[in-house]
Length: 168
Image 1: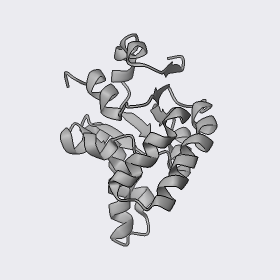
Image 2 (image 1 turned 90 degrees about the vertical axis):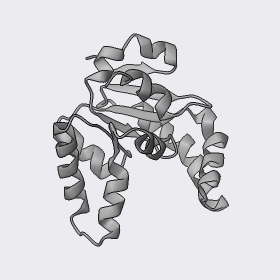
Image 3 (image 1 turned 60 degrees about the vertical axis):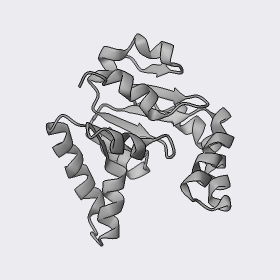
Image 4 (image 1 turned 180 degrees about the horizontal axis):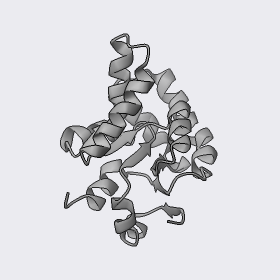
């Protein structure tokens, strides 16, 4: 599959079949991973699993996370994770296909508000908003992703994944 960049729900329609075959979606924070996973157990928030293992004191939380991902693939789940550098390196080395999901820089203010709504401090929310802009070139230029979904203002991960996987 040649890398596809999806910037609207209209673009999505042309790529349903290819996207449905990919079981890993690497998604920026505040795009709705946790919400989607709570709403539909077909999706699994691997980032939350990683944080749980880290908080439990496991020193090998990255290894446990990677093992869990493979178990979830075997169970037919769609796995959602954050674009942590060590995770991206692992999936690149393992040649695992993934879709990268990230916000357009025009979403900066919206993502600051999402972080504030979650209970983040104003300082952290502002820093996160700055990261939406500063990480955009890195994410949009990722050459390893099989596809990219660039979220626009008012869009969430569920807007796309529920359409792709609506008949699971």
